[in-house]
Length: 426
Image (cartoon, rainbow, N blue to C red; front, side, top):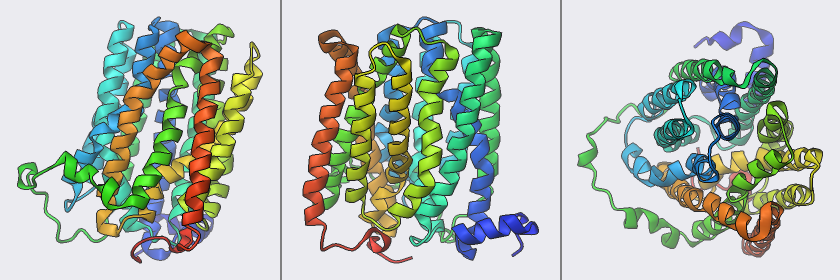
């Protein structure tokens, strides 16, 4: 088979280095869709700032917007149940189109509550794609190349989002903040184009699958979440993940309040909320991709916790200096370079190929639970210990997570390294 990517030598070299021949078609279409999805994400990063600064959203409304990207994952255990044994691509394409169309409509918001409602609906629908997209990675990329391939894709995505977020922040600062009514519709349309490109991927091993009606498969929430008990190693890892994610998410409202108190403009807000973090994700992700191919998730989360502690400490001690906040966000971005890869791929260390949607469903549902709680805990803590105090509390959570990672690593010393950590071979 001759792919469009093989017409030019540099593309052939890139594809050959990142993935084996059998995965090159998948990699080509994912790499082609990544800049489009990155442009969409770069605008989406400014959603909470538009709500707070332009439409004067309250702290509760801001907390809702911060909670929803993670909180929307709460139903993923059910979406995983529906995806299991069925073709995966339809579960990426149609929810992907729908959520991006809703973000397109953000430009027509007449008040903050309308923007919040559109954002909530978009993220809940978009969360339906998670188990299917994750399963496509599991089926189409061999374990020997998976982290490097996904790392290259996410690097492209975040590089684009960094540039777009900076450009949009400058545009809203210099040309008028009400240009968000143009920017969000354009971003939604570009995001939909990215889904169309992605839809050209052919999922391996689905020749005999049929798209059965949902009622043909009984669902039990208790039985699915019981996986945490049936696989104690996975359950312990999810505890570590929960503490890390909770500590990070509860700081979201405090970060917005902090930079507003530092009188940040749209450009500075774009740098804090999008550019600093995304830029260092781009820089660190190729390095993380190679590291994660060689170590297990426990070790990786331990290293990530140390970076998170350093980044949040800088923000906690920033006072009125927004440059320290930017520096802290840059360090957090370096942590997230590996964190985003782990969030998407870590369950493959524990799950057999056919069980990946189940593990992903449990993992994402726990993400949703902490996502719906943590930002509101952050709002409550702001009233008790102040904005900077929230970041000190988050540092305490990261230290606890580091202790759990160190404890767990002792139990994993006799286990296989991450490169051969899959329960089954490709």
